[in-house]
Structure formats: structure tokens, C-alpha cells
Length: 226
Image (cartoon, rainbow, N blue to C red; front, side, top):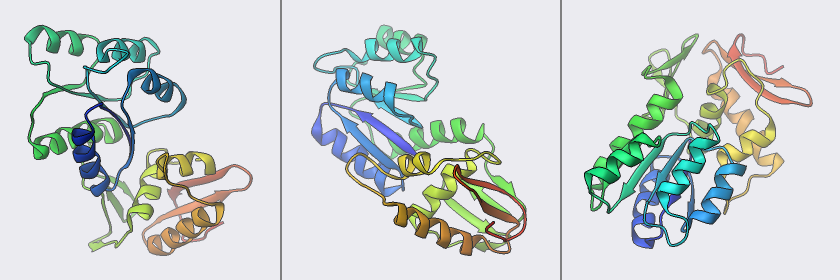
């Protein structure tokens, strides 16, 4: 999943960013509301972690702008503002959860997992295609009873394709899902990741099909990489 952290406290951003990257997610970080507003307009995210006390555009205003564009990305507010009125205001404006600083990192991770699970799988624990079972919240996959040993990049690729099951995902969309702003993925790197994931999906009843000139799609079918 691709997650945007909007937080001007570097220590907090470092800690939660490291936890999310350690869980296999792609993480972008910004420290002010103006740049965050632009990023949210230009890039799709699976989760936003939002501080309210930003140095320029207040987090509440940023949340209002986001929802006024009918952007339904889950928002986890993480802020020092503990007043009941602030909580109610943020939730009424469309925040999905509200966490008051200081908080335990394990609680943050659990709340983030819950929001990602809700948005990506509509609460369904696993997505199944043939014998392939994908546990998105726990970032695990198996072929029947056999666990698949996937690298973070391979699981990220499977995740991006499964989120658009039976629909074509462009190469650009895949690269965007797999890379943060400070990382890159060449065309050859993407081809290698697709090739390796295809090999690991053999015999599962799921395949990655190439749609010439458009991209790839994940579907039920034979192992052919057509």
C-alpha cells in the first residue's frame, strides 16, 4: 500500500514511517499542509496519516479540502489535540480514526492495519483466486496450504494487481504503487518483478496476463503468461 504521512515532527514521522516501511508499505512524507494538499491532488494513496498542527495549512482545513473533492482515502488523524470538540470536528469532516499523541506505536500500527483492511478488502480477511489466498492486512499469500515466499516488492505487485482484479493495471500505476518519491523502478526492474511473481503463482489457478500496450491484469486462469 502507498501511504502519505503529513507530520512536521521529524521524530514522530521517522518512527511511524519506519514502522510502515517495515510492514512492507511504500511511504511518502511531507511536513506542511500546502505541499500535502498538492500531493493528495496528484497522487492516489491507500492511507493518509494526518497531523492537525501543521505550520501553514491547518490539518482540519486540509481534511476539509480532501473530502470536498470526494476523495475517500482513509485518514488516520494523529495529533496532540485531545479536546472532545476537536475529535468530533475531525470525525464529522470525514476522518476515519483519531489518535492522540503520545501514543504507543503498536496501537498506531493496529489502527493503520484496520483502516487498510477496511478500504482494500471491505472487511473480508482474504481474497481468493483459485488456490491462491491473499491476506492483505498481514501481507501474506499462500497457494493452497503452501505459504508463498514473496519479497516485499513481489507482494506489493500482487497487492496492486489484486486491488484491481480482472482489470488492466498500467505499468505507470504499478510503478507508482511500488515506489515512494525517493525510490525508482526501471522498466526492466518491473519486468523482472512480474516474471518472478508469475513463477511463484504457477499452479495456483491465478495468473498475471499481459495486455499488450496497456499493462497487466490478475485473473483466474492457467499458468500461461500470455
